[in-house]
Image 1 (cartoon, rainbow, N blue to C red):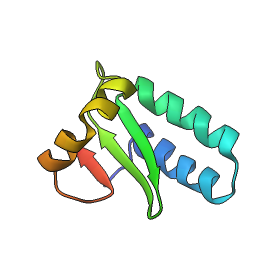
Image 2: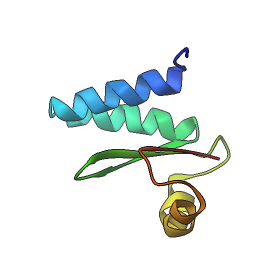
Image 3: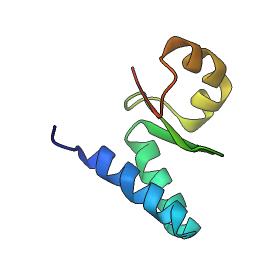
Length: 79
């Protein structure tokens, strides 16, 4: 399956986090936000909500519990 630019950015962000390059990781997170994919870090790695354009980080933060209940528990969520 061909990777999308969002998938590639997600992978690059994970590599940046592992290399402790938090400036790059934050910049990639901000770019992903503009694409409707929202990254959150947890002890197991990153969780990404692919909600699409039109959503904001604030929306995801305020509705995260409901979003998580709506999808399977895995590392990538899609609406």
